[in-house]
Length: 414
Image 1 (cartoon, rainbow, N blue to C red):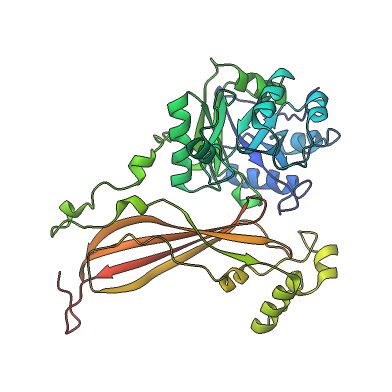
Image 2: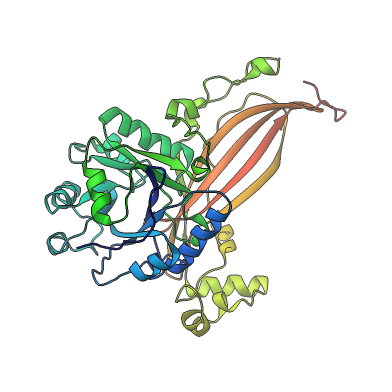
């Protein structure tokens, strides 16, 4: 049975597919409809990017009756289907879902035996992929490093995930490269604007789920994880960084002059849990009252349920600021006598709902140096990741701190 198809071809002999997308049709944490994603594809194509199609992989749910072929044909885009299940080594994508596979497992469970999932998918004519392989707790790398799980059943892994950090993707890439596991790229999109951020480039045309499964099962078939910017004509596919390349081994002080920068490099890229936030309807109400927030998506349950895009009341993203979280690891920078914040940025990926338990994980993302009119400066970038009880990232924040040496009169001493 052909799952879902389209009229899009591969005129230059390659196909770019985003293999991990969640929609509001079947995932309660997603805010994008399938048609919304198709419109986004058209917009990105108009900007010169290449997206040939995507696979809808709802969480813990697969309805064989769902059919997107008419929409796919209308927008000239491949739309395939799969499912994302939760196993004892993290999340797993399955393509070529058959009645036999569905009869074997209760997809609502969050502890399916991974080896059985991979084996059954293969034996029933499908294929399984370890999702966001380098992400803590819900990626296979953690389970291999901490429990030495058997990787023999795992033939494919998503090592370039649009919702994972560079360090997390590098962890997955290192694991796959060391164990001969095929590597895929996907956006893990829950909202329209994230689709296509990462994809897989296949040699040849892929228009059906059967052709996708055949390509992934064929050891001679070529496919490569790519980022959206690598799909433009003439663009080169960048070499995937390793963990060692992302953790600086030198301070680059040779370009700046001065003494070598001393700090604890072992903490860079290593996440630690720093706190938990329990979100309730009452806490959302209190937050909105304190800020005089009147958006009905946050304050009017009936409106949010009947007219809102998420089907229920949600919390303002700023509620994360009420979490009492600890400090990230200390890199012990041995430079400067003053510190100040140089900037911050926030990314919000999923809605926060009443009943959510949000866990915060902090890390030192990077340490680097610059020199300017005021002299030598050392930047420390702290990254905090907020994850809900389903193992899904709802937000990421980054904060840059600058270390400088300032003399008693206020001038720079470097």
